[in-house]
Image 1 (tube, rainbow, N blue to C red):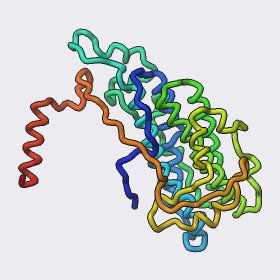
Image 2: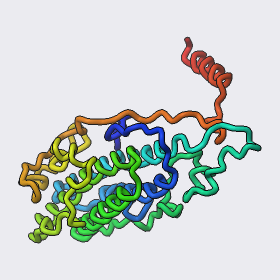
Image 3: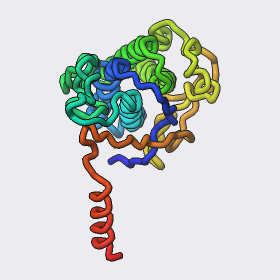
Image 4: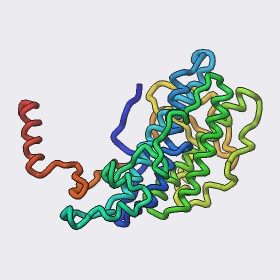
Amino acid sequence: MFKRVDRLAIELPLSGSPDPNGASAVQELLGGRFGEMSTLNNYMFQSFNFRGKTKLRAFYDIVASITAEEFGHVELVANTINLMLVGSTSPGDPDSTPLRIGKDARMTSHFIESAQTALPYDSMGRPWNGSYVVSSGNLIFDLLHNFFLECGARTHKMRVYEMTDHPAAREMTGYLLVRGGVHILAYAKALQIATGVDVTKLFPIPKLDNKVFDTTRKWEAMGEHRRLYTFSDKDYQNIAQIWKGVHPIDGGKLEAYAGLPGHSGSIPDLPDLPEEFAPGISAEDLLLIASRLKREAGL
């Protein structure tokens, strides 16, 4: 089972400058073949279907703990898209065409389907697809696939970083480049233990140091590229059997942590969009709802 915390993985900066077309590019990092929905669902189904949990516990713990982190990454990318769309339109009489910008946006779906919020789609509006999930039942195959999947995700994040300079997109992408690097290395080390092959020699793909990106440097200075978390109070402690030694790039000690990271951010409170009829609750409705809640609570 999963435990939910009402916080984002990091604090996302607010910006007064919307970037609807940039938001459509960031959609690739959410619902694309190498997006966070793919990493989440690949690892989630592999952890559900894992054979030999007792004999191969450390490998199961690696996949399971990274699964939990990926839930937070899906949430982070979705909220980034939401913030990039804030301010795209303004209220107006329907005959004034207040959603005019939507017809020229790369992803008109943001303005028609979801009231300017994230969708489980890629950057071209294609829905995320369950066929992206690989859960073969073969440990080596799945670990190798996961290494490849994380390398593809890293490549796409770098490209999207170069497509938009929106502050929320840059902050999110920089953080996920660091955390994705941890996952690449975790799967590489798991493969090395399982096969004897030093996959870490392929790291990183692409051959570009995270430090060239402005928003990655603070996270690496904090050591987040060397930490793997269980995302559980007591379980999945065997990640330390695999996540140990030193980082192949900077030589720093790898650290396995129980629980959650020590940093987080607030969940953005999205403003009303009367022109989108969202949330569709008037001031009078709020008073009625509040009175009903009080009555149901016996207050």
